[in-house]
Length: 38
Image (cartoon, rainbow, N blue to C red; front, side):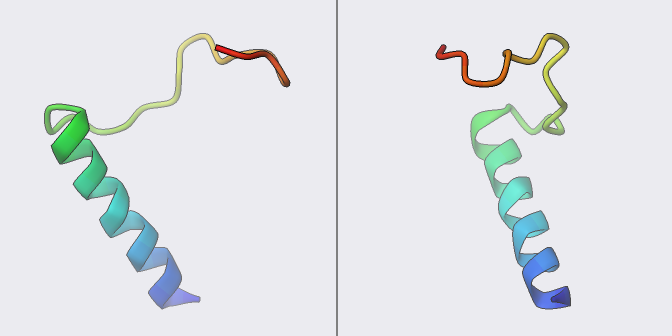
């Protein structure tokens, strides 16, 4: 379980560095309604 949590955290860091200009990934201020398409 610890390995999985660390792997997910590491992957999120890579995504943030690569696609989010190094900023932390924050929750959306206005999340979509359940089932709503973008």
